[in-house]
Length: 301
Image 1 (cartoon, rainbow, N blue to C red):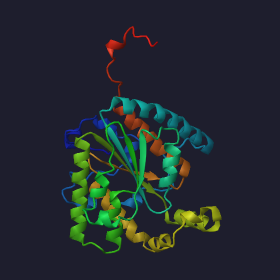
Image 2 (image 1 turned 180 degrees about the vertical axis):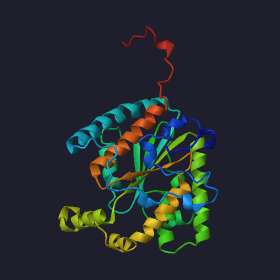
Image 3 (image 1 turned 135 degrees about the vertical axis):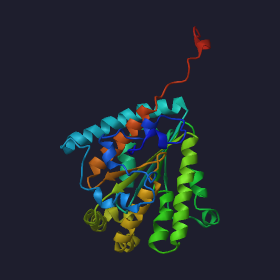
Image 4 (image 1 turned 90 degrees about the vertical axis):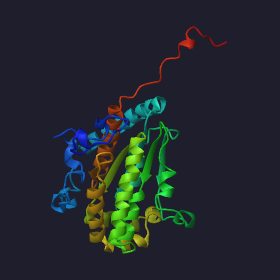
């Protein structure tokens, strides 16, 4: 839903409005402009610091009201998911990407709590297995993309392969550029074959992460969520922020744009993403299959 013109979009089998924000709309302020049209001028790239993690652009100003709105949209998503499945023309992939404690798990629980597990699936991506490492890095991803009528949620994603290896210096700048191009081509293929891709970067501040990590340490019931490796990654905060800025700018394409979600507020995070998914499903002009005329007058005995 970034500010791109229809002419930049490839031939997609779904309305551009499903992924493209109307010019000047509230959504357009939280999308990363695609690299198309920059003419290689990096100065036109969108800096990550231009997005305030404390912002609440979709909030009513009252937390209880916002929480009620999330529940109401969750009910709408349940109905829309049923129609999406019955329609069967499209697939929906929601990518949730963010630093440790940014709320990927909480988003899944908050947004999809009312939907059927038969139609909404989630994958939590971890470090690749030995078998997965024996293949190209997108091999395991392709196996989990949604089928017709399915909604798939990625908790982390293929973007880990242009974050962790980059920050730790495991791949060269040239290899990084190759991977970014691979991902763009991969997502374009998915989009052109009917997959609607929504990519959300859950954006929190360094201080908010500190507090959430401390909460996990202080609460015995949350110790299972804490890993000492989280502290190692926190030491590389600036490097990860730079890596995120690069991937956001290089892979926010007309066929798979990035939305930056200010996520210091957990309630607002859920409200914004739930609204995005709902608006996308509505824009697809979903319909039930044609009526079966042979059922007219049929009586079950």
